[in-house]
Every structure is written in structure tokens, then in C-alpha cells.
Image (cartoon, rainbow over all chains, first blue to last red; front, side, top):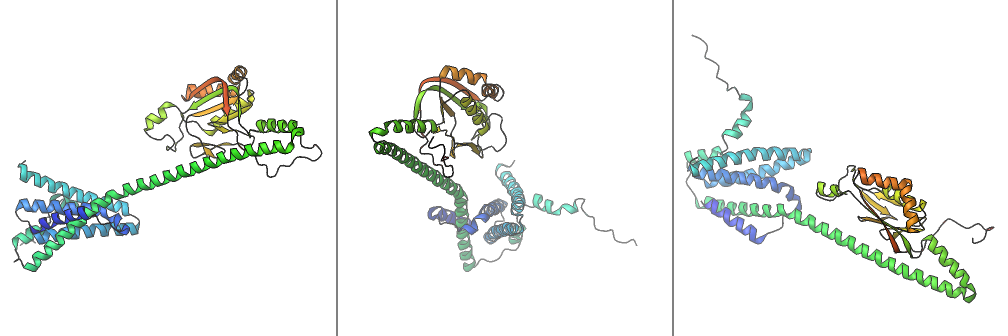
Length: 110
Length: 286
């Protein structure tokens, strides 16, 4: 619960402060956001499954973001940044969809 | 005793990665953490909270700044547009100054030549009129050409942005053909969209824009030609250019409109500067 509250506080703080992101970080943002979404959906599903854990959530969130950014970074330097990003987005997209489906089953029992 | 049966491999053993993705989207560490709950420490909770706040802030900031580049690119766009507008204004101002100076030169010339040189001054005026240096007025034809209506609507954007050859789009060669036809039909002075054509003028293209004397033209293209309206129209229609315009109209749906006018005013092109050409001594100034 602490993690969810902290996350919300952080989101609001980010919206209010709107600091500028350094330009070298910007290519990694889109994929990092998708990875973060994946972690959020995973956490939501775990919450509905009754096995939510703050520590696991935060670790998965941060590691997801870092790994995603790292993959894009690596891809950019190998010259396959776009393709690698597509792969990451596909995998994360599938995960988000199946987590969303599990959440939907929990909520609507359908 | 028979040997123990080999472990059964799933048929899709080579697709473990895909199965992993499809069947276990939930992080297994949630289940592991639930199975072996760890006692919470105050430090652990504080750390979790701090990291969560940081992650949330990073998330929203990322989302905001992903949307930023569009704003920045449109800003750059606006900056470039402003720049173009500013420079165009500057050029126009200088052209006006040029025209004023040309008029002053003409007047000074007249004064310098004095009363005895009135004939010479008149001759200069006629020569610069023929050369296209000064504005001309008289009856003539006005031909308005425009791209086929479909190109704009079908593409749904700037018809010039499409790099492919497009049948309904006018090119420099089309304007050249029309202008040549007008000269052949007896035109005395011609201007395209207010750009006076002189013997040094060129109708060219850059990308898909048509340039006259290195100034890009905007659609529609209005070609004004001073000359005997009725005769010129008949000769133009009978000539090759008339047939060319007709075929553009029929085949490519180019919009072409030819109208006679009692009074056309063509701007002057300004002083023509010949850098290399020199008159022959023997034949004098003429």
C-alpha cells in the first residue's frame, strides 16, 4: 500500500513541478514508460490476487524501467534500436494485455 | 528393470520464451514473497516509500516530456516561418527601395541630359520599357493556370510535398511553354504573378516549386501579357502552346483560364545589370 501511495504522490509531484528531462535521457523515456506501465499492471493484478508486496512492486518497477532503457541504449549503439524497441514493446504489450485480462476477470468475474 | 523413462519434453519446448510471456505475465516474485513473508522493518518501509515517490515522479515527468518534442518541433517550425516572413518583408522593402532609386536615376538622367536631351530621354524610356526594366501598362491577355483540383483534395495536404510525379501538377516546363507561346503570339511584355520577365529571366523549378528569377511562385499562376488582345488570343490558341494548354486541360485536368483585359499593369523588373556584355565600338550605342 505504501508503494502505491508513494507512487501517486510522486506522479502528482512530477505533474506539479514539471522539471525538464536532460536531452540525452529522452530517447529512453517512451520505452521506460511502457515498462513502468507493465509493472503497474502487474502490481494491480497481484493486489487483486491478494499477494501484493511493496518491495517486489518497487523492485520490479525500477528494474523494468532500467532494463528497458538499457535495451534501447544497447540497441541504439548496435544500430538496431528501433527493432529492439519494437520487440520490447511487443513483449511488454502482451504482458500488459494478459495482466489487464486477469484484472478484468477479477473485477467483472468474466 | 527397464531404464527410467526420459523426462517428457513439452511439444513446444523451443518456444519457452513465448510461453513465458503468454502464460506467466505476473512477476513470480510476488508469489515467492507471499509464500515467505519477510518482517517489515521501518527502514525498509521508508526506502520503499522514497523509491515509490521517485518512480512516480519519474513516470509523470517522462510522460510529460514525451509529449514535449512535438511542441518543440512546432516551435521550430514557427520560428522558421517567422524567419521566412521577416526575410521576405526585407526583400520586398529592398525591392521598393530599388524601384524608387530607379525612378530617381531616370529623373536625374533626364535632368542631366537637359532640354536638348529630351529625345534621348524618351529613347531611354522606350528602351527600358522594351527591356522590362520599368513598369508597363496596356491591353492584353491574362492566363490563369492552376494544378488539377483533385491533387490537393486527394492527397489531403500540400500537393508539393509529394515527391512522386503527379499528372495534375504544373511544372516549370508547362509555364515555359505557355510563355513561349505568348511571345510567339506577339506579346510585348509578360509577367508571371507580378514577376516581370526580361531577357535575363529564367523559369525554373526547385523541388516542386516553380521559380521565376529565383523567386518561388504561389499557386495559381497568373501570366499577364501585354499585346493586341484579340489577335494574340487567336494566334496563341492556333499555335502549339494553345494545343498544349488544351491537352493539359483535357488530360491532366489542369485549370486554365484565358481572359482578355483592356488594361494590364506589369511591374518593372528593375535595373538590368550586364556584367560582361559590351556594345561594339563600331556600331555605337545602338
